Length: 563
Ligand code: SF4
Image: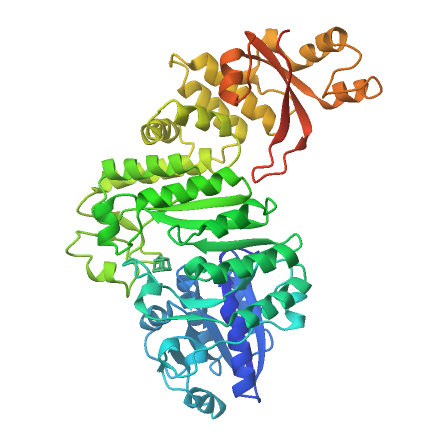
């Protein structure tokens, strides 16, 4: 029996872990089956997808359905049903029942709810007889076995995992019960024995993947166990980047000590803050203390070795516009590298969806079920905050304006209000529909601050941030005839001595000038950048080498305090 296990991923670099588990369980329990793992993306043309799926005319298609692909899965199955009447389908994954409801009852379609490891043998014997029922339901946490095998085989790394992120789970289930999350619908928690986890990771690392993403819902749920896995990865992980979903309230001092010695760009943490509004946190059953979460994120940020990604959700219960502004301001103070402001999705099967009427939710009936309004945010307010989150995405979630944001934060700026007004400018000028380059964003930002009393300082900081990104020329809007970097280089070439301590010797003087960009900054700017200066001005040299930290900006050095 030929089976195609189909996963439609959101991006080409992603891979679909459940297909690998499925393949192993099918081949173990139904030895007469041959399973081909087929991964596509949601951006592939529909017609091409259909033609590729029909190739070889399999007996069964097993689809893994998720929020991002369920509508496409419905469309594909609808067409495949027409094309060949021998095709049969099994739909699994979190959206299986929704897909089933939409397709309607058919003897050729089976909906499978739950994980494949939780099934009893009836599913496999029915499959072997070609007589699958229309619905199967299992629960991983209710079976006596409660275990899952290693998903990968050596050939996977040169086949379906080639040039893709490798997904791995060392535990299943979540200790929390957030009301908006599907993971909270199934109660239970299982940690794979540590020796097996390390053995499996050793196998994955043999193939030197560029990224391994742990999909454990709360990786540091058991801090000592998490630390042992990190220790292993530190010693054996090579250049692989590891991604973890982390709870801010489960950090220990031992973990901080360990992370301090970690090389930059090896670990990436996604930290779910969601809100700092106490009433909201209680309503969504997320028992974290915003103050201690803030301390943890700030402490992690100071290490400068871990890429920090903090999540905030827009549209949660009890979060008014003012409360959302406060949450966003609190996140800015925490200082993550990336602020993910996701719009709340009212997922079928969650407690929040069951409470939708009492909370006044209006949400899309189509995946991903994004909300439009609730009792605390009118549709207009939510729309305004949505564009604000897009503005933060464009301006903050990159390394273009690091010094500017640090200055504004230190100066006590209300960051939410700042981005709210910047967002209105972007919206008026249609920049949410255009691909905005770093130059465009910088120009718009400069225009946005031109009436401020600190405009001159902000303009200099914009120049600094621009040159730290490795550009060798300033864009038109930042150019100043008196401060042209190439003219400054010529002047310095004649003025600076034959040797300059900490910068160059006589033998490499020419190289120093060739490789450097120079810019003259005021004392005030230099202080905000972080230099200790006594003179009224100073010249900063920008190097072609990058710093070895998370942001990897180009190195900068104060070389002279006077022109
Ligand atoms: S949102 Fe995260 S922490 Fe909350 S239940 Fe879901 S997986 Fe667990």
